Length: 293
Ligand code: OGA
Ligand code: MN
Image (tube, rainbow, N blue to C red):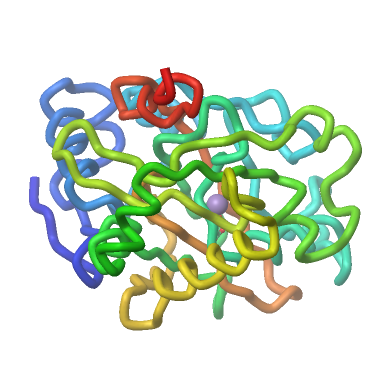
């Protein structure tokens, strides 16, 4: 297996090992798992991905999420990100899927609004837009290391609230439906996620972050905006231009990502599987009630 660095201090392409080797062989899984812990974003090119293979690969890393209420793919392990309707037509401007795509274009980490949150996401390109539609990543470990020492110290023992409706509300007031709100109340996590394999810390915030424990709301939102701005400066970004056969896996504990726009008259079809975090992934330290005890 070859690991070729791609981004500014994180992200790598994996060559010589693909999804099927990881699904079938413990040794390939262990090598890719180690690269995942180290590089945070892994790119696999030229994969012959099927739904079954994507699940078999993803399942190696931990339990899979089922797609959330009211999303395409609800109740299955697949989150479908697309502007293509089930009948093959493209969604019109202003359609719910277009608004969702716009919400995905805010810097975020997946499922920080869920219990448990996500360890990793695996995204496969099934139809690539001819222009645009890139996905961008930044390292929240490098962000943590870049913070001024006093701020880092403050955030080290801080807790933040995450709410799916909060990020959707930035795009359209009622984008999160009543059912989505009811099934996903806000959740609270520690703002520093420590990787138990290498001890490296990452700042844990996202577009979904709607408050910080013990801080006035407006002040908290301003701090979150400032931290996101610091994290996502252009020189810190790895931008991925998708090709047919690409699959990317990223560490939701240690990165932010966002989609980029593409022309709405072009189809784009992506399928995501999402792996839940467990205590072995450092989740044990993230619960406010457990850490306080
Ligand atoms: C995701 C996501 C961005 C994209 O799959 O979680 O945010 O470019 N995707 O589709
Ligand atoms: Mn996402």
